[in-house]
Image (tube, rainbow, N blue to C red; front, side, top):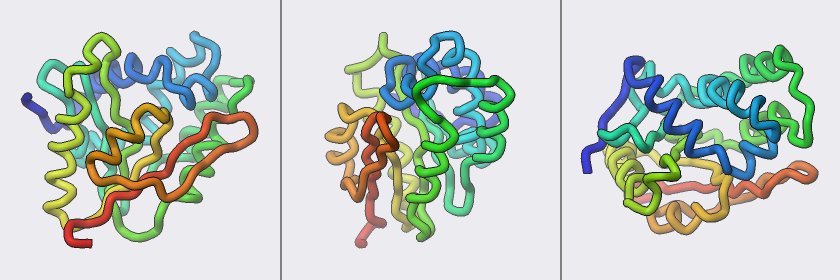
Length: 192
């Protein structure tokens, strides 16, 4: 299965795949429960939380653009201020306090240099074909070549076993009020 590295030219297709993939994600829909809010704001969540991957050529997609992953290299962080501004400008009110949850994610992120995976997703119509695994394996080969560990937050408990098969282990959890439970997962550097 062919996995491509994407720059800015691949942003539109990757964002479309991820918006589709996260339409039923527990955290995404707790944060943006209203369908209209989700469709208008989730692309901004992707932009502020993982959009720097395009500039760093650390965004990946399958050749058919049905699956995408946004990896942030060491030293590159999500833009939480921009995200909070986007939510404030939209006047989002609902059960989920997205900016507070994303701030908690940032607070609990490890401080040691690592690769961070804020988003990976597969179009629901293409799930079960190994696209997510192929994306992870391609990216993790590069992560391993860098000699550094990797970190992610699994917002969907169904994905924890996949990440575990790829060498990640649960190192903590995040839950604010009635939010969904998010698993913090770490993968040691090669030989670590």
